[in-house]
Each structure stands twice: as C-alpha cells, then as structure tokens.
Length: 437
Image (tube, rainbow, N blue to C red; front, top):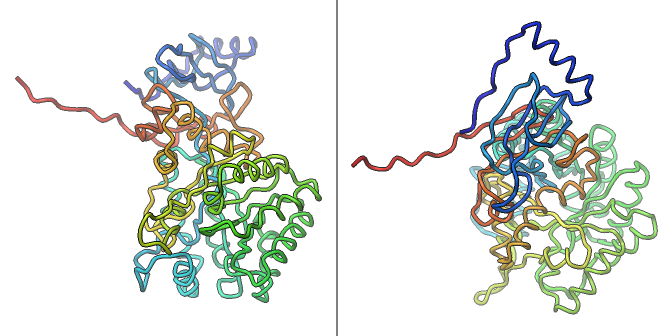
C-alpha cells in the first residue's frame, strides 16, 4: 500500500540521530522505501534517500529521521519531460468556427482566434493544461510560443506568471517562434527579439510558412548566436520528401558549432523516405548533432489528408533514427485545438500511441519509447540536473508496473510524482470489489 508520510516526533533523541546521520554523509529528510529502479521481475528493491531536494542515497534499508513513502515495489523513474507543447493555444476547441481539418485550416483558425487572445485567457487555458501535465508526472516542459504583429507579446504575458506559479511542480522554459512566417511578416523579427529579452530562452522557427524558408532558418541561427541560446524548429512538415530543409539546418549547425543545441520537430517527411534514404538522413542528423522531436498525435491527425485510401501515417520513425545515433524525444505538441482536438497531457499515452503507429513491439524498443519521454527528452533540453542518480534533483515519477516497457504497453498512469523531493500529486490505486459469495 502507498502510505502517507510518517510523522516524526521532534524529540531530543531524533534530533541527535539526524545530526549523527548528517555527520556520516548520508543526510535525508525523505525516503522512498521499497522502490524498483531497474526493469524486470527479478529487479531488487532499494530505497531512495533525499535531502534538500536532491538524491543522496540509492541503497537498501536506508534509515534516518525522515518522511517515509512506502512505494511497495513499484517502478520509480525520472519525471517526464515535455519537449514540445503549445500552451498558448491549448484548450480552444469551443471557439472554432469550422470542423475542417488539415494544417492550413488549423493555422487559419488559430490566426483568427488569436486576435482575441488576452494575457488573462491565455493564462487560464495554459493553467488548465499545466494541471493535466502535473497529474501525469511531468516535471520539465519546453513550451513553444508564437509571436507576430497580430498577437504581439500577449501570450508571453499570459505564460510568464505560470513559470513561477508552477515552479513547485515543474521547470518551464519558453521557445519563441514565428508560426505564420518571419521574413514575410514585418514586425515579427522585432517581437522575437523582445520576447527573448523578456523571458524566452530558446528560439524556434516554422520555415515552411515563410516566403523564404532558408532565409528564416539563416535568421534564426543568427538570433540564436546573438543570445547564445538553443534552437528548436518546426521543420519539414509535409507528406513527401521531394524537398527538405534539414540538410541546411545540419550544415548551419556544423558551421556554427551548434551540435547538441539544435532540435527539429515534426519532420514528417522522414516517414516518406525509403530505408536507404532514411538511414543516410539519420546519419547526417547524428553527425551534425541535431536532435528530433516526433509529435505522434498531431502528425497522425494532420498527415495524409490528401489521400482518400491507403492513408499514410506520416509519423517519423524515431526508433529507426535512434539506431543511427540521433537523439529523439516524443512529445504532446497541441492539446484540444484545431491542430490536435485531443489530449490529456499523458506522455506515457503518447509513447504508447507512437509505438502503435510505428509498429514497435519488441520490449527493448518499447522501453526506448519510454526513454524518449524521460532521459532522452532531458538530453534534448540539455537539463544539467536530471536523472535517477545520487546528486541529481529528486524529480521522480512512480508507476505501478515492473518495467518501462510495461508502462508503455499497458499505458500505466503515474501514481505519484516528486519535484525536488516534494510530492506533487498522488493517485490512489484502483481497487476491484469482487462480489461477495
């Protein structure tokens, strides 16, 4: 049974024990008792000791004057990492004028609606989405936020207060990008720069909406170098691979020494490549140090609309890219808007959706799907203080299963999560009530 914190009496003896424990270098104010950190039924249970928000010990039979949570042999992993989500335009389904699908229609609907966005309604819609993220064990988020002369910086003004308000549960960073073009949309460049000065920490792009896609990519790299920040682009979103911009992105990444600091999202055109071309493209991405974020729900919903039978999936095969050395993440992207009219912010569900779409059935590859919403996603965000290891921040998720593969295969929702060693939510285990004899 998952237990509530065990109260500790503030006696002199307990205070002495705490001092002795700290003198021994094993100080703890919280212990997660009886946890599973390795996969498989034979994995041994251990305890995780936490002090001042950091993991100080991972070993058996820890003992200290501490708050204790009995995890009951369940799986504990690092918290989930959302690398690509649009908080500013989430939860707007009730405002749509048309149910027509497709990328152009979605961009048009949001372009119309954002004229009416205010910092207040952005704040409340984003807050609703963040609450879902917390309840699904997410501890880190990169949100992509669009600016242009229509919306100005109103969405940024709505999101910035939430960065502080949700610090107890997650770290939020903001990627500023132009959804409707940059060079063809006068005033957008200045707004990107101002947004970065006012709280954005990553610069993004959507070159396929620009009159000069390569010009936009060039300018985004220039801005990134000016501010010494990372780049995270929407890239190569389309049904065929006749022309792709990722080669230019790889070239510029190498030219400016930006390997490990560039990510590209969607890249649905990769799904249209032959195995030989996919391998070559993956090796190019890997050698340049460009990471890939696949957005299964949005990509599946929007791709293939030009076909009336044998409809393509349009989801880039991230697990194939991993085999060639490309770092990849899976992420939510849009929630309850015309780009994706679904979503509960569960990254476990997103990993399961990806595994279904890309027909990933081998347990080792399924476990890699879990890694793409935890450790690999953290590497993409270059998080310096993440992971299940002594010395790292205690940002953790607890799931009622034996392995990461099982978590994905069975869509196991987290039962609780911790941010800096403090519990952020708790979901009671379901209890089946069998009929009495």
